[in-house]
Image 1 (cartoon, rainbow, N blue to C red):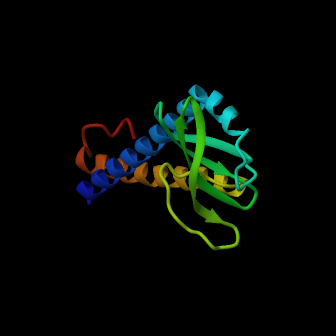
Image 2 (tube, rainbow, N blue to C red):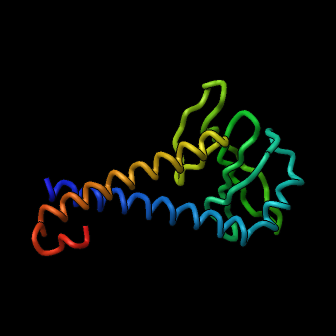
Length: 148
């Protein structure tokens, strides 16, 4: 039981750290390359974008997550002659149910989604913490009884 709890706790912690690092990476890219996003506002896109997140960026290519009122898309841009050109997009999700792809890092798409991610993550971390405490207590029953 204790080894399963430890393995589960470590896996959950690794997933949370990996997901969090991916989100921070996207936020940093979005902050650093916001001028590129301003340039893309001038391009006639097939959707009206509410917000952008930069997923990948190089001097010649960029992948951007864009959300409109009814769907989320990954837009691809290429830089040619110093100007960003729209290459295409892939619809990741849609409120109409016509698209249900997965992207990493996962972004929530509504206020309810934010609450679900935060609440779900907190519950998973709490469960993992409880399992780790139980495993720790069983392993060190007599040594650290004052701490717990």
